[in-house]
Length: 297
Ligand code: GDP
Image (cartoon, rainbow, N blue to C red):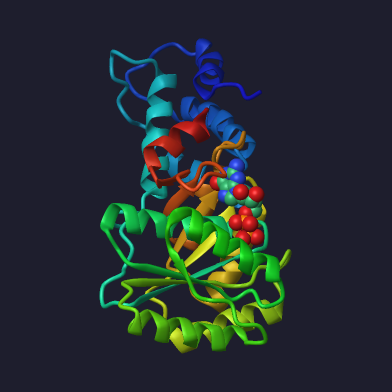
């Protein structure tokens, strides 16, 4: 479906004689192709533009190594720069869960994979770090969502807060906090309500819960296939609630993962994990090298 960037660039460079260093014209011609590749990978236009401009400044005048073609050299410069932008500080999988019980707030739009991801991360903490984990659903408008978390909890062997009808999200959050303290849990997840679009009520609910529990992490779950929309969602949630990290789901799909670059470039938030399937084990720590390779095709 996509043309490989290296192949494209070889076409551009066929006409150019090999010189000692990358000329401005060489770089410009190559970066036109890079820009198209980024847009095809669903990177947002302003991010693709800025990225290309930065790379242009870095690449122009660089000495061309004898063993590679100018095209290969530009691809390497682009790849390295992609990794640099995608990389956050520290280890992406390292969640701040000291001082138990540590609350983790999960936010995102309905259908983004929030509930599944909550169970996936909970399972990971239990299996890999031996943590005692509790999960609670705050989606009072969708009983099915509450039941879904309960079923996932049974599946992954993680406790869920018993469902009590008629409570508000804040009441549930308080009960989860108490239960987590009394029950000796290390971590508790609060799976907030999702909607199809961001609305004021949804944001207010999440903000109220945040104020009550003071989460150690607020993880935003976004569908990695939604590109531009994912970035808008991230900006809105970060602005109104404050996000400490992002999880991109559906990275097992056909998409090229451009949302990852836009997300990092626009929000500056670290991407912690990627969802790679429907199964409860289909979660990977974010790997900038791998995504950079995928964006370039
Ligand atoms: P929520 O409404 O945000 O809580 O979304 P759910 O957790 O209910 O997920 C919606 C659908 O997406 C479910 O069918 C999940 O199995 C599926 N899903 C979640 N994460 C992934 C993923 O990483 N890859 C794929 N292929 N499907 C996923």
